[in-house]
Amino acid sequence: MSTKKRILYISQEVTPFLKASEISSNVKNLAQKTQESGKEIRVFMPRYGLVNERRNQLHEVIRLSGMNMIINDVDHPLIIKVASIPSAKMQVYFIDNPEFFKRKFIAKDEKGKTFDDNVQRAVFFIRGTLETVKKLGWIPDVIHCHGWMTSFLPMYLKTHFKDEPHYANTKIISSIYEDKFAGTLDKNTEDILKFDGVTDEHLSHLKEKADYINLTKTAIDYSDGIVLFSDDIETEITDYVSKTKIDTLKFVNSEQHHEDCAKFYDEIIEKDAKLAE
Image 1: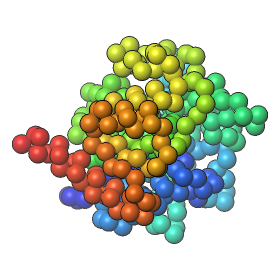
Image 2 (image 1 turned 180 degrees about the vertical axis):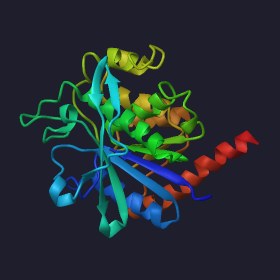
Image 3 (image 1 turned 90 degrees about the vertical axis):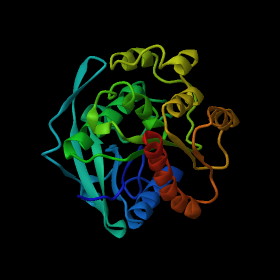
Image 4 (image 1 turned 45 degrees about the vertical axis):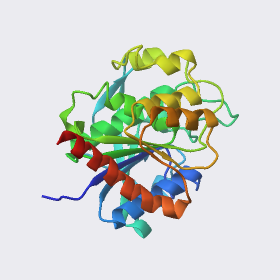
């Protein structure tokens, strides 16, 4: 049986499937470096309409597709696709659903208006990923989240999936970028999350105001570690991280950060093992 540590990357963007950005480039390079360091990895992202299936040679994984997920009392089919990044010798899995991801935009339409169903899309993405990883029979030691669309995952793992033995010993790390968005989340955010068993206690920040700052604070509250991927992060967020005293990896530079992350994963895993002794 393999003793390699297993790292699951869940990101709203990964290059080369989308244009290079701070998040998309970082996730691809970090996952590649982590794999080269001797760890097992899996990478998941949404299959936006922007992703060219023919050019990137995406194909559906029939054995993983076919599940239906109820989001806010509506049934949605889950389709799983996969593609390779030959230069990095790694695969990327795609969470797909025509209603949520067919549009050729990530979070805003052509006029710059934020999609009204972004919370439902985010919930479908993170739940779809966690259900698919279960179906793969692959137990991650660490889940590393990237981008605001993954911000609900730490809370979901400790509420909606809290009785799921597959993730009983999995640690959550959230990365924080300059990935902020203007305005607030969907008006029915609370209803969508409560349908999945999230309570008012878990929504304390979002009840105040469902904006980027409070979404990030919610992710921090349920994470086991934080990675800062920029020098220019909102002061309110960095101050909040400091007050929580959560294990934090601060930004140095991209190349050094990738090496430091591999060590950070081990520290988070080993810390939990020592506490259990």
